[in-house]
Length: 338
Image (tube, rainbow, N blue to C red; front, side):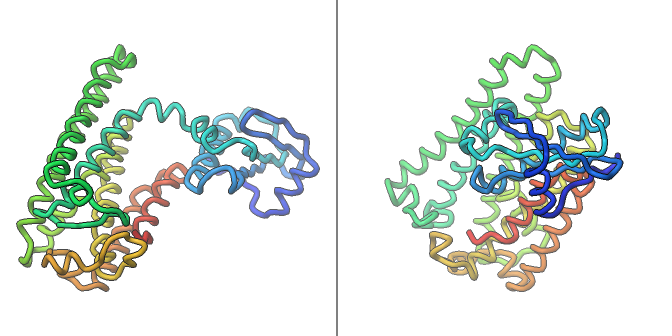
């Protein structure tokens, strides 16, 4: 597939915007100006005031992908700028761009977030990490009490299963056999991920004060933290009816960023900024937990983190621009401060 030629410089955009013919749409305006080439050259512009960086990049990708589907039907020899209208509010932009994705994946995203919060509430309990603060606020058992925190976590886990089971049972899309099969498979992935996450947390408590083999440490972290990250990617791939090859490629990427996320947590627990983290640092050392930092030292943990992120990005380079968000996510995990 021939790569789309794009405008690179600010003056190129300004030239088209000031001299070109324009067509104003509800969300996107198109500016067109003849060039002296035998092909079209496009540019996509989204104001920083319109929305956040992640959504801006998604808007650009979607516009480029839609252009790619019609480019062979268009007259050649033009510079074309697609301008996302500044006047649209962010919430309108969010919904317009990804409304179909939201409607299809929302129950799964909600269930995933419920399980994530269940795991955080239980992780903070005195019998596990015994944390008093999370994101600068008292943890659930400190704000209320131990029984309330325990039951809140249990309730969130149960609600997650209710949300997914109702989606599978009552969704109108399920009249199509292939939709029903992909949703049941996604639900199965969900149950396995929760099971692995709980197993990983159990192993974490059992390894306190002990030195373990690297493969055991990796198994623990892949499951304790990585299970939900891997699940979010695999569920998306399954619901989108990706090929098995793509599912496995994305799974490889997700396993690596999941493990990288935990290693970064280990690093932040050692040298993070308490004001940014919203909780005291050094808790892992205080509890004598087995982490990548305790096993390999700070620099060794950072080397492992960088290698995992590099390998994760290489896994998805084959998708080109379509993988831009996933690449940005991997880099964010490496560079985050909380």
